[in-house]
Every structure is written in C-alpha cells, then in structure tokens.
Amino acid sequence: MKTKAINNTYTLSELADSVVFKNTLSIEEAKEAAEQLAEARKKNRDNFTESQKLYAKVLQLRFLMEDYAKSEVYNDELSFAFFLKQYIKLSYKINKYFANDINLKETELSLILNRHRLPNEKTIVRLELHSSNTIPAISWYRVLEKEKEFQLQANTKFKQKQNRFVKNRLQFD
Amino acid sequence: MNITYLKTGEKKDVIIELVKDPDYKGIKKNKYHFNWNGEKSNTVFKLRLLDDKEILGLVSLKEFPTEKRIEISLLASSVDNTGKNKIYEGIAGALIAHACREAIKLFAIDACVSLTPKTKLKKHYIEKYGMKDAGKQVYLDLDCIINFVNKYEI
Image 1 (cartoon, rainbow over the protein chains, first blue to last red):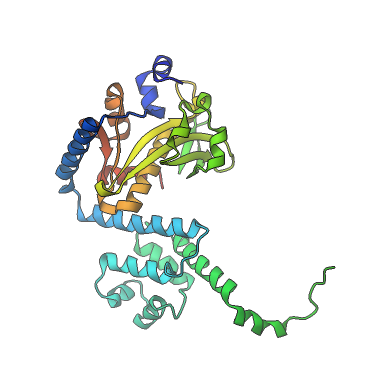
Image 2: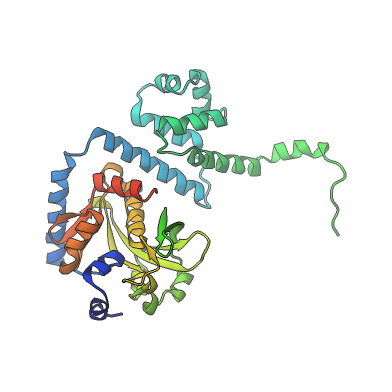
C-alpha cells in the first residue's frame, strides 16, 4: 500500500498504533538527526539511577543467556560457570560474600565456578531469588541443560564404560 | 509476552522470531502494508501467536553499534490488525518491546531505540509509547526501555 493510501484509510492514532513508516533522510538530515539524538541522550544519561543501571546489566545477561540456550550452536566457553561469574561480577568484588548471600559454602561455589561441579536445583532457585526474579531459574537451567547435553554427547569413554551393563538389546532388521 | 484478543479481552501469548528467507514469499504488501523485501539487509522479526503460524506483525531493525542504538526502520501490524476493526491489540507495542530487548542485549545501560517518524505521527508515538523527542527522531533510552520490558513482560 502506498503511504498516501494508508493515510487515507486510517486515522493518525490508528497508524501510530500499528505502523512505523520508513523515513529516508538525506545525508545532511541524517547527520543533523544523529547530532540531535546524541545531545538529547547525553542530557538524560545523568538521570539514570544506579538501580536502573544494575537492572539493565542483569537484563542484558539474562537475554544473552536465553538467546544462547535457544541457539543451535554450542560454545564451550559459554558455560553455566561463565554466566554465573558474569552475574557475580555485577555486584560483588569477592565471591565469598556472594556465596554467603545465597547460603552456599565458598568451596562449593568455587567448584561450580571452576567447572568441577554442576549446580543443583536449590542453587539455581536461589539464583532466581537473588536476582529478584529478573533472571528466572529456568533461564539458568536451560544454559546448564545445554552444557550437560553436549557433555553427554561428547563423552565417548563414559558411553563405552556403560556398554557392558546392557543386555537383551532391541534388535532391528 | 502477550497481546489482547479484543473480542473477549483475553491475553494471548506471542512469540517473536527472526524472519528467514523463505518467509518473505508469504510476506506480501497487501497483507503487511509495505514491500518487506527491501528490508533484507536489516534484522527483521515476525510476531505470531504461540500456537499459530500466521504472522501478525513485522519489525525491521537496524543496528548502529558506534552510537549504541537500534533504529526501527519499518514496522507494521498485519492489515487485519490495523484500524478500528483490528482483531488483536498490542502488536506494535510488543514489537517495539522486542526492539528494546535487543537494545538492552547489545548495549545494556547505553541501550537506545529510535525511529524517524512522519511529522504528523510524532506526537502520537510520544503519547502512545512514552517516546522522547529528539527533533527529527523520537527515542527510548534506559528508563523508558525498562518500562517497556516490564510492561510487556519480556
């Protein structure tokens, strides 16, 4: 539909409710628009509270976790431990204090962060509660599941070890 | 995230996904107001109900990493969901909320979502979505983005 035709069919309020038109600016206009926007944003920036800034960082981490968990790609660096380290760094300088706040032994936290142990459900739920539900337990859980899926798939030695425990296997022609 | 079925007032869960090449075959101007093929160089998302494949709305986003900003280049609810006889309420809002999600994901505290409105529509975007006025553009930055994320339960 041409812009003119849309304008004749709907009221302005209806349009704003459903449509954003493409509005191509000339190079000069685009430059001016960018400067105006930068200036306006600069003025507002000082008004953001520390709480809003922390919330934005926690949300960013949540969205990164969720998109990674959903993606088809496995990246060994993007482990549960990696995301947990990022989360702790947002508001703690010392891991011990964080461990204390979620009632976890410092050694247990250290084992999780160094990927020597996977977290249990209690820990995952406490993470949700610690973030005031900003990062739901399910988002943590999905990252963990992805890691476990890959480990199971890749651990051929473990699979070979189990071989001798299975008998009467299904037979197919 | 959800939109409202206007006939009953019922909230319906929606999903927003990337538009892939084969999708463009079904995205026609007579159903989605514009020619969307021209948006292939941007990141285009589609909105649909959780249990239905039909696309109810589209948004084309362009990233400006050096400015830490995402621009809404084009957005449309389907023709059936535009105007006084629309079926669902909140499609455009949900798509803008998704742009906010992408901006937060990329830029955290510096996140910004902007659009360059037609002059006549500018005040409507400001009133309807709480956008801020920056002359030629209107925009959402951190405080407004947080409101959007919370309002649309992203």
